[in-house]
Length: 82
Picture 1 (cartoon, rainbow, N blue to C red):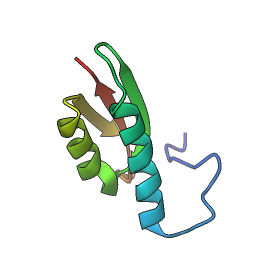
Picture 2: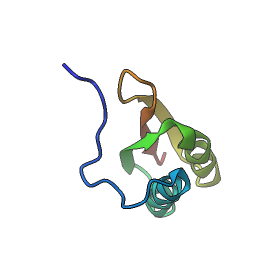
Picture 3: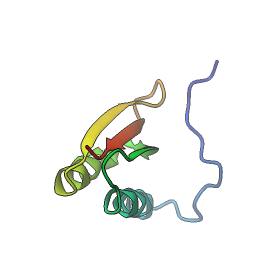
Picture 4: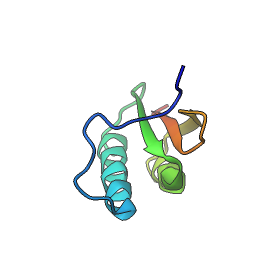
């Protein structure tokens, strides 16, 4: 079984900063509106993990992460508002 991550609809830009901005925007949009008991999971590139942690801290949300594939390039993050 090939355990790699592929985008369903790849971006029309290869700029990693564009991808990081999209991922961060999605995380922020969910985190900023979470209420007690809400949970959110998504796949992000590992180079965006610092921003995910910072968003969780600012929004006072529990953060967890695990590898999404064998390369370590992608992470599954889990946010939970306690």
